[in-house]
Image 1 (cartoon, one colour):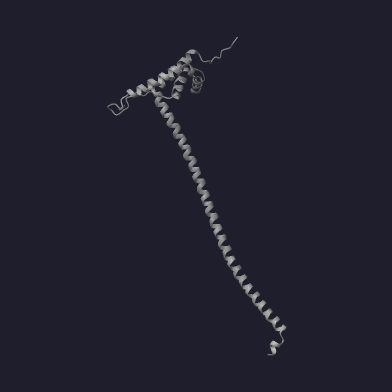
Image 2 (cartoon, rainbow, N blue to C red):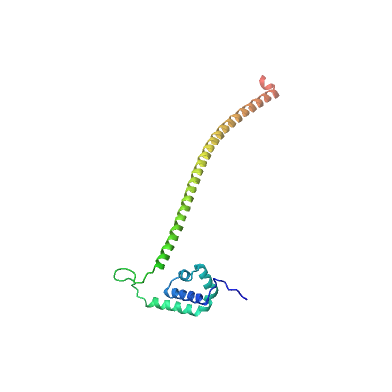
Length: 188
């Protein structure tokens, strides 16, 4: 004997799900909004409604979906271009579910933006610290370069002086050797 889950989807549940989704398609709303509305009516989660729709029910209503989309398109073409009433307000009725979805969406976007701002602030602080560290490193390296340049100039000067001394000593040595080789050079 096959056992049936207590929370199993019934044909009535599937029909209710399809009706709500087709209504939302005709109105130009989203499937997510339809899943939320159906979830409230059936006491299920929007995710469960979405899964049921995509996995099982949608395939049975392909023609109805096409007709709903066609009806939505015709409704848009017939709708007047000026949707505002005399008071400057939208003529379309607004229900609480729409208002709540709007507020939830913007609250989610707001929190997302707050998180992004905090991340950018952290990145900015990190970059500022990195710039300060690099500036300190640059100053230290310039100081070291200055010291090494001065030391190099001093060593170069000492080296030239040493070469001059060695050159003079070599010349003196050469002169003494030349004098020793030619003893007649002194008598003349």
